[in-house]
Amino acid sequence: MVPDPARCRYAIVVAVDTYALPRGPRDTRAWYRDADPMEQVDYALVDFVQQHAGQTVLDLGCGLGGYSKVLAERGFDVRAFDVVPEYVERARELGVPAELYDGERLPLPDGSVDTAILLEVIEHLEDPVRLLGEAHRVARAGVLVTTPNCTQSFGRVPIEFSHMLDVDHRQFFTQASLAALLDEVFGSCEVEQVAPIDRNLAGLVLPRPLRPLYRWLDRFGRAKPQYFFRLRARAPAR
View 1 (cartoon, rainbow, N blue to C red):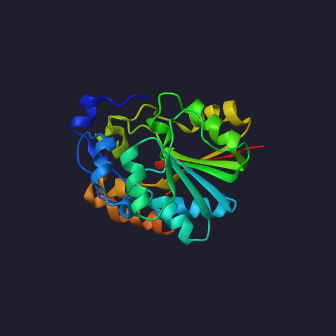
View 2: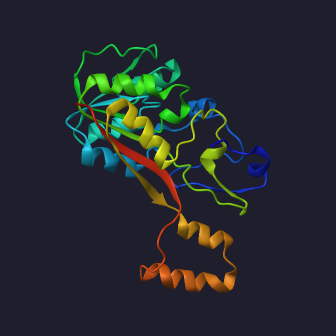
View 3: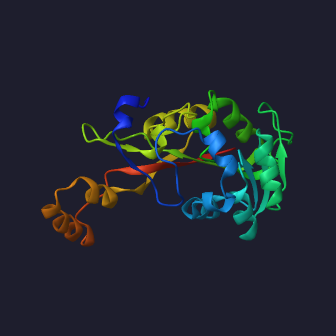
């Protein structure tokens, strides 16, 4: 799924409200260099890792190191790797034991960590299979993956997810395509859509007279979420 620039130009942008994002098309490779590492942490992702990870965690594509720092504070033994030297230095400034690697083979033995995590990483890669294969090799128990969700389309409504404006994204995963990729590498997986945004959408697109009705339906569980911002997945390593 490839974003339509003409459509995005005039679209309302919908994002999960975890930190401020620049409006319009952006290259996150440059933008993150000036960002606060801790403001980038989505604690729903931290909770996901805490629920499913083993004691030793490899943060693969650690970026500025915010997730590694929070996971270490929650008691995990974390190792972190990234291919961008500036990111590694920023992570080290937080006290994260981040290491630079060449993007090919991780300098770790087979089965050397319990869980490998790739949080908002694989959408940036031309060939995610290579990195997922390395995660498979070094993890004893499993691999956790999150990525922006491109399963749904808003049709003719002029709205786009904010991640559709990231010019450095190379992959646009649906629930089915992510499952197919992980099945190819790991043999099996579980993929789910999370972070519903229907309440935000209702406030943007519904005529004002209908908004109280939607709030009533939502309050009593009659309005089922249909639009989700993120995909998250679990795959066994062995």
